[in-house]
Figure 1 (cartoon, rainbow, N blue to C red):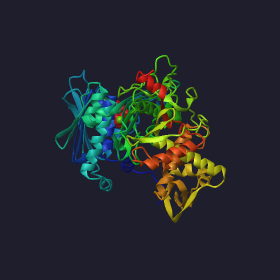
Figure 2: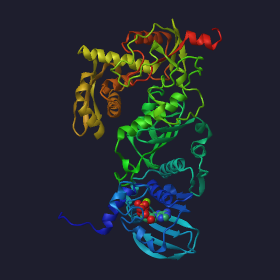
Figure 3: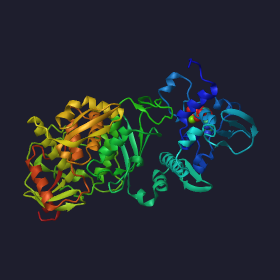
Figure 4: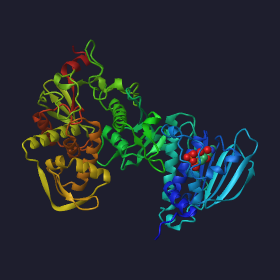
Length: 585
Ligand code: ADP
Ligand code: MG
């Protein structure tokens, strides 16, 4: 075929395809326009999953009558007018593509009235072409009605899911915006019935209640964290570890109140929950990260759902620490008050999550924090290192006797110097990590050859991680070879993974390695990733012999006091302390 310029109609359809993937994308763009217009109330009505009709009504500042038609031109926007502004975008929209794209694939009617004008204006377009326009009365604000979506693109329609599936995407979307814009009253009506309303009174917790219902909402902890150096802030809610879901869709992230999708951010949150959740369970989280506009490039994706960060690792660590701080503060540890006159340095136990770096971490649960805990081993002033290879303290673990298991997460143990609570996941992680490192130094990685090689498909990012860390992965027992098209054939896995899902082990290790590699310095992230995914989880019931064996292994390990991520494996309640608490001394 000779090269020729596409017809305007075809070009418009192609461009529209990037912005308008499905009914929920239309709702997203229209709602964002209403938010940008300063609306305090946004009503969304949908019929038949949004395919038959989507109507979004706002009470925002409206569009001047003479500009209504221009709004439907491609790249027409009132939000930026210079290249400089492109790097500091404060509005949700800026590409000027939504209205023309939506109009190109539907029948669209827009009416708008500016609050100070007595009358408004109406325009109707069919498949991108204006069919009528003129003055029209109505209340202040803007209404957009989109009917017969993809009526001119039957192929695209076929890709849509059932109307109930499309409806639930829209419900999810509206409720997410309600969470991060608690000052706006959102209402969603599905096939004529109101399905969701948020109060719009500015109180985040009330928005949360409207979205999650009373039960989940009360188990959500408030997150407020700040990285003082950069000023990056994290605000929102995250679920107590008891509140989990089977997939990641309940983790919602906003950057400067723009809803974004980001594996990196999910990882930051999952990392914060490390050791607190069972395998394949994910937290509920809704977090807004505020960073200077010029530190984020929002112009990375036609529908603006992916963004690029100037300092990705800082965003990661700010989120991870803010969430971890809240979880630690809420952790189910008895609240011991510090003994009078003792020299508890406030930041000791929490030195991994320095409070100083998180001005005003608030504790949703209102319980006492780990600052009250004494770390074991007498190394109260020793910093808890981030490097797994670097011993936080070379003191051996004391010989411990199992008393029982608590919350399916901690081993309660007795030592000569009082009571110890051992985090089963962190302890096992440490044991595995040290074992892997030792085998490495003995040059004999423990690999388990698979009976039949398993093909594994990698995302481009996972492929990159694999290539960069190939040698380390092989040294630790993974064996694989390229299998074409981003796939690899997996032949062996580190022995600690046993027979449990070899492909998944590799993917997990790659994902963890990729993001740990961003935030950590020189240590061997591959070994840490392997031990983390091989270790027993919180929530697993352990028999007494299993617990005893774990404590014994921990005793024998060179760096027993922290897990490879630098978190404590155990906390200590000294006999002295207990005696003082009970008034015996
Ligand atoms: P963008 O949001 O990227 O600027 P759109 O195609 O979504 O592009 O909208 C084009 C322009 O139309 C906006 O810049 C804005 O000026 C105007 N507009 C669209 N929707 C509304 C609305 N609900 N209220 C007021 N103005 C609107
Ligand atoms: Mg827009």
